[in-house]
Length: 117
Image (cartoon, rainbow, N blue to C red):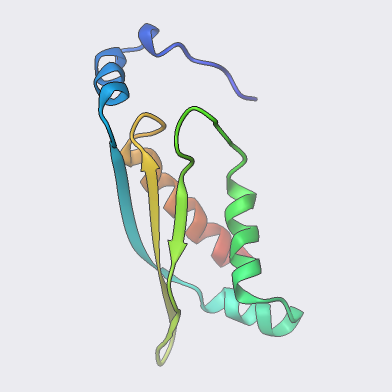
C-alpha cells in the first residue's frame, strides 16, 4: 500500500529542497545483467526478448508521476558468451524520486525477476 510522505517531515528535507531547485538532477546507473534464463524462456514460449524484458520490468514497478520525469530503463544488444548471455541495462531517474540505493535495489530486483522468469 502506498503512503504519501511529506518531504518536510523527514530527515532528508534539506536535501529534497536542494534537489527540487536543481535544474536536472538525474542519476544514471548501469549494470550488466545475466539474461541466459530469459532467452531460454523466449525460445520455449515463442515470446520476443524485448517484450519479456518489459514484462519483467513492469512486474517489479507500478508507479507514475506527473511531477518529474519518469525513470527510464534502456538496454542495448545482448552478447552471447560461452556459458552465459549478458545485457547492459541503464536506469536513469530524477534524484528527487529516489536515491542511488533505491535505484540499485531496483536493478537487483530486476536481475532476480529475470532469473526467476
